[in-house]
Image (cartoon, rainbow, N blue to C red; front, side):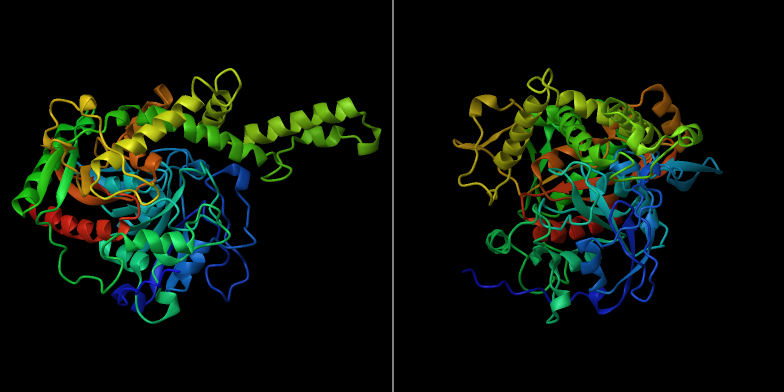
Length: 513
C-alpha cells in the first residue's frame, strides 16, 4: 500500500472564511446550517423552477468545511447548454461595460457566466462552475478572471445535475490563481484543510479511487511540501504552441497578445516550441455529437411526472376523467400527450435542439456514421495530447509516440526519435473577446449554432479529460483595451504544477502586456 502523501502547508485562504457562489446546476441546501429553507436548484430551466434538493453536492459540503459561506446561486445556460449564458429561463447574464463613453452590455460567456460575473464584480471570492466543453474557462476569459478545470475524476460530481457524464467537470473561478491552488492542494494539520485532490467520493462513480490518486500524484511535482511563496521558475520549461490553434477565426488582437505573451515567457528562460495536434481540427465536431447524445439520455427523465414541473392546461384538467374509466390505449395516448406538453413547455429552444441532435446521433440509422466516429475522434485527440507532453499519462500502460510521417513540415525534430515534448500547451482561451450582448442575441436568432465556434480552443482538453486553466490577458483592439484569456493545458493529473506555473504566467502577463 502506498504511503499517504504529505499535504501542503495551510494556505492563507483556509485560515479565514470566504464567500462562495454556486452555479445553479449544483445541488445545495440552505445557505447557512441554521436555516431550514433550502435554496432552489433550477439549472436555469422552467422545468426545475421550484426544485429544492433534499441533499447537497459533495463539492459544496467540502468547501463549507473549509470556511465557505454560501452567498447565492448563479445563473447559467439551461442545463449548462450554451456559450453566452443567454439560454436561460431567468434572463441573460451580462457584464456591464463602456464603449465610446456609452454603457453597453457584453456577454459573460457560458455556461458558467453567472459564476464568472459574481467573482468579477466582487460578490464572491470563489465561484463554483461546471466545465463540459469550456464552460468555466470561456466565462473566465470574457470577464477577466481565473477559471480552472481540473483533471477529470479529481473533484466529485455527486450532486451536479448532469449534462454529459463523460465530460462534466466541476471547476473553480477566482480573481487570482492562489485561492484556487489553496483549495485544490490544501495543507495544514486539520483534516478539513486536506487538499481536494486527495478526496475520493464513493458516491461518484467517476471519482478517481484513493489508490489511483496517490499513484498519479507520486508521479507528479508540487503535490507535496509547502505552497511556493515565490513564483514558479519558468527557466527550461517547454511550452507548446499548437499550430492548429492559429485559425482564421482567431481575432488579430488576440493573436498578437498570444504572441507577445509567448515572447515574454521566452525572455524569462522558457522554451517555446511549435507542436502539432492534428486531430483537434475535428474535436469541436466530435464534441457536438458526443455531448448532445449524452444529454438526450440524461434529460429523458424530465417528463413532468418523475422529475420537473407538470405543465397541465386548464382545458385538460376540466376534461379529465377518472383513471378507472380509461382503456389501455387511451391511457398510453394521453400519457404521450402529457410528456410532450411538459417537455415542450419546460425546455428552452437550445435544450430541445441538443436533445433532437443527440437522439438522432444515437438512432440506429445514424450511430455508426456519427456517434461511433465521434468516439474514435475523441481517442485520437487524447492520443495527440499524450504524444506532445513530456510526462506520460498515468492512466496508460505505455507512452504514445508520433509517427514521423504524420508530422507537418513546420514541426522540427528534437532527435531521431521525434519532435520536442513539452510541459504545457499555451494558447488562447477563446478566438475573440467578449461580444456585445445585443450582437449575441441577434446572431442566435439568425444562426443558433454560430456560438458553438467559441468552444474551439477549450473542447479538446475536455475531450481528453486534461487539466486546463484560463488566466486574464489584456488585448488592444479598435475598441480600446479589452480582456481575453490565455489558456494553459497540462498532462493528466499535473494539476498541481499547472496551478503553480499558471500563477507565474498570470503575473507576467498582468505586468507586461
